[in-house]
Structure formats: structure tokens, C-alpha cells
Amino acid sequence: MKLFNTLTQSLETFTPLSDDNTVRVYVCGVTPYDTTHLGHAFTYVSFDALMRYLEYTGYTVRYVQNVTDIDDDVLRKARELGMAWDELGRRETERFLRDMDALNVRRPAVYARATDEIPHIIEVVQTLVARGYAYVSEGCVYYSIKKDPDFGAMARAIGLEDYASMLTIANERGNFPDDTRKKDPLDFVLWQAQAPGEPAWQSPWGPGRPGWHIECSSMVMRHLGPQIDIHGGGADLAFPHHTCEIAQSEHYTGKAPFSRFWVHTGMVYQDGEKMSKSLGNLTLVSNLLKDYSADAIRLTLLSHHYRHPWECFAEDLSVATQTVEQLQHVRRLVGRSASGEDSMLRHQFTAAMDDDLDTPQAVVLLKEAAAKVIAEPNLETGAEILRLTNVLGLCV
Ligand SMILES: [Zn+2]
Image 1 (cartoon, rainbow, N blue to C red):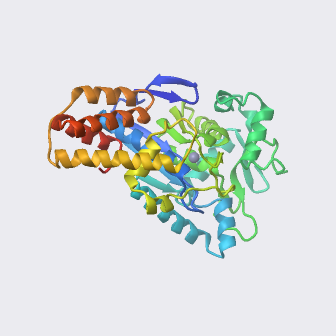
Image 2: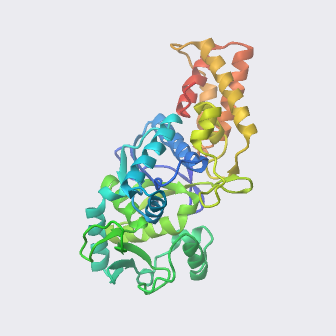
Image 3: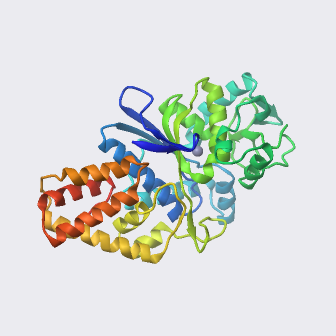
């Protein structure tokens, strides 16, 4: 299989690092302070399709995802709602999992909460301080980018060529350049000193809480080991989040690459703008599920290539609904216990999926094959279609 690696900006042949036939995958999860929108669904359905396909081709997949249950957004939203931050986190995590379950996204083997990770995070941060990559300042610990000549390979890969462009984007995404406790505006926080009224955990630097980037590095290393095969997330995580993850992880373990492949999903647009909580132009999964079947929503998402940005229109969902009806028609023709195969269709399907997970092409193949089977019943092809829809995670 060929997969696009953000770090090298090229299609590379996928093989796991270890020889135990296991693919180790980590995908950055949600911050549970608001409901799940179509952008989230696109990321997690795309990765779910990748996991299912890797298993179909014979690998064992070990998949870990995090939930950032403590951060600035969670605390702010909890204050606005007059709710306890941990209660808000639990409620929104449950909602997210319910939406993902509804879309037949399989749960990861480990679904790790930041607040369960604190002792290991502290150990990683201590080591980075001891090795000179991080420094303590007024109860905070920062990663020092000047001490790390390798910093920023991922940023350069996605076109942030120099310090100034990195700083601009980092600050847009919450790096707090005016924090006077930092030596350099691009330094990022590993441990954040307790602010008045905020929850805190004890640490060698005083009470505080972990930064966001270190949470993911710590979870990857604890649950999957020092090096993994695929690290994924939305395209807006490549910098600074994943760039920072690489820096701190590789200097903690002394091993590179931290992840063999970096896989990023395209942003989803609504009304011409990126779907985001701050703009309020959200299509919520829970609302879509009132009007469309889970299969139709899933098929709509998989009809877009995981790497490309796209905008969702109601017409897409109607077309997908028709395709689901065609596949259901095939199901009725073939029945539940049908056997038989169509090696030509299977070959075309795997060729599409091997080409950087080309699910849009795979969907077209199944749709065309279904139309043929409906016009002229062929139970072998029908059985193959149903097996392959299963690889895409459809419940037809
Ligand atoms: Zn992450």
C-alpha cells in the first residue's frame, strides 16, 4: 500500500517498523468541550477505514487515541456553563463516543485521558529538563527550541520555511507569544503553573497541569512504545502540535523517527469557510443523524479523499442515500449467508485502497458493481460487494 507521508511530502510504500505484523497507530483525539461536528467525523471515519483496510490486508492493528480532558477550552466552557470541568469533560466525551458509535467507527484499543497520564508526563518533562531541552520558569516548564537544531522539519515540509512563518501560525493556534516567562516566543509549554481557581496536580515544579503537546507524546510512548508506524490527525495539527510532538519525543527516547508515517486529514468547509467552533458554522453529527442514515453519512465522508479539503452539501447526502439503497438492494438479492467471490472487483478495490486510501474510487467501484448486479443478478459479485462494503465499515 502507498500512503502519503506529510513529513516527506511523498507517497511511500507502507510497511510496519516491527516484524510482529502489528501496525501501531496513534490519532489525536478530541477536546471534550463541545459537540462533534462533521470535521471530526471526517477524521475519525477516514482513520477507521484505514484501520479496517490494514486488518483486511492481514495486519494486526493496535490503535490508541487520546481525549484532552483538561485544557484552556474545557476550563473556559465549564465556567461559562457553570459546570464542573471534569463533569463537562465526561459528558462531552460520552457524546463524542455515542456519535462515533452511531457512525460505526470502532473504538480504539486504548482511549486515554490526559488526566490519567500525569505521572508519566512528569517523568518525560523531568528527563527533557535534565537533558537541557527544557527549562523551568516561574513554576512552568518550556521546551527550548533554540536548544534543538532539528526543530521544525514538519513545519518546513508543509511550507513554513522560516522562524517568522512558524511563529505566526503557532500564535494563531494558541502559543501565547507574550508569555514573559518564555525565553523565546516559539518555545512551547510542557508544564503549566496553576492559575488561580484552576485545577492542579503536584509536580517537581509546583502545582500545575500538563501542556497539550506533551500529553500526546507521553501517551504514544506509554501505550505504543518509542516508535510507531502511523501518527494521524487533522491537517491543522501538523504544526505546531505534531512538530512539537516530534521534537520532545525524539529527544526523550533518543530514537527517530518517532512515527514512520504522518497522516493528515483535510479540513471540512461549510458556507465557504473552515468548519470550526469559533466560526459557529458547524454541521453536527447528531443533527445529521436525525435526517440521514449512518451509512449515508459514512458514505458521504468516504466519497471524499481523506487528504483533501471539501465542503459538505445536502446533495452529497442524497446521492449517498441512493447508493446505500442500491447496496441494500444487493443485500436483499444475495441474502445473509451468500458465498462466492469476484476476484476482478476485489482486485480493483484493493488497487484503489492501496493508492493512498482512495476511498472515493472504492465507493465508485462498489456503486457501479451494485448497479450491474441489480440490472442482472450475479450472486458471486453481490457477495463480494457486501464483503467490501464491510471493509469500508458500512452496515448495509
Ligand atoms: Zn495530539
